[in-house]
Amino acid sequence: MKLIAQNDHLAGAKSPIAIEMANDASPYDISLDGVTRVDLHFPRFSDGRAFSQAVMLRRRLGFTGEIRATGDVLVDQLVQMQRTGFTSAVLRADQDLAVGQRLLAHYPAFYQGDAVSPAPHFAKVA
Image 1 (cartoon, rainbow, N blue to C red):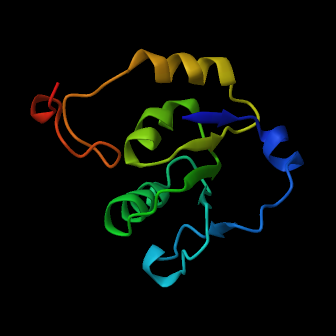
Image 2 (cartoon, rainbow, N blue to C red; image 1 turned 180 degrees about the vertical axis):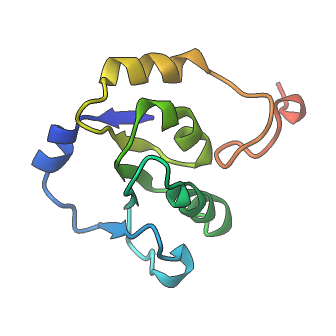
């Protein structure tokens, strides 16, 4: 998962092939034709609706592009974000990128399946 500092996200130009989805919108109601990035917003760290949106985009709609977390994103959420299909996250300004990278590296694999790797670890062919 790619981690992005708040300043770097704000300084970057808007991509014409990226869309922002409100956390109360349904992924089924948007057209993903030509879209390479979907930004999902966390208005508060305790609001997890964007996790469900990411799973719907990956597993049910087959979206293969970048899913970016924006808003009130804490390093504590990164592992779950990665497992639900997010590929990048814009950390809140007071969050340390290095801490986030260490946290992600601490969990290189999981026994159960998730939105990214649906097959459980025991069912994977070596």
